[in-house]
Image (tube, rainbow, N blue to C red; front, side):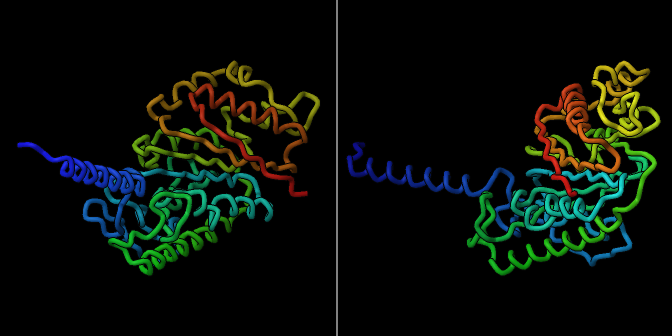
Amino acid sequence: MLVSLKEIKFFLSLFLLIFFMSSVHAAKFPEGYPKCWKDDENPVNDNVVELDETKVNLGQDSEIFCPINSKLGHRFYLIDFTSPLAKAQVDWISSRTFGIPLVKTTPPYWKISYMKIDDTPVQSQKIAYSQCRMKTGNKSKFLGEKTNAGCEGHKKIENTFKAWFLLNSTFENVFLKEHKIESKNSLIFEYLFHVLREQKTDFTNEYPERELVIVSDLMQHSDRFSFYRHCKTITSTVPDKCRSFESLLKKAGIEDYINDRKPNKETLKNLKVTILYINHDYETKDGLSSSLLELWENLFKHIGIENYEVVKQLDIK
């Protein structure tokens, strides 16, 4: 049977239309993204429960606002409370890890988790908060942020976002309230490895994108090794300059301790580490920062973390 030129043009146009619509649809939603709030294949968990400020995580379900059948991304905040924080430092932490800045830097339906570094043994520490960032329903730089008019009501999405934002803000007030306590230890190294290695943190490479944000002065302190000792010259009474990472490894048992516990390469896939560096000038001298950051950069390289960034706090005096 002969096909006319007119029919060929019609089928070609139909094919191009279908291809174009498929491309637009694919560009509108990232892979695994819930296309609708009540998506039959991948619905969003809306099991919101009443806040309970007597509980570490306010009594909230750890998967609220998360897609039930997919993992899009995970940002995990590890915040150091082992040294007292000034109000300006708390304000800086807040502006980097909560509120509108959090919304503007975190894609919709990424999981957001917070954990404290304090005197609690790392194996016993609980995740203080773990929920997914609800989409706003409005246009932003992120794909899928806007309400899907085909299956979602804009008012419903806006109200749900407001509910998520209120929960996050309420948690912030509780989480950042206790910031004047001095801890005996500062197990930053151990907390880092704990988040990367342990299944219960849900920070595995099943997520196509992950960011571990460490908010800290980076002054590791334990019986095994302490930067208050390693970063102090003979003539100084307080930390003033760190010796090299190589000299740290030469100390008895340190290299074996690190190598025996460091995560494997698979664990480090899809990972970025961001350091929000807090400078406590009451416990350190000027000039310490560069050698301390170099020490941590060499530690990251030693354990296989290649994608990292350091953001320094501005002076507060």
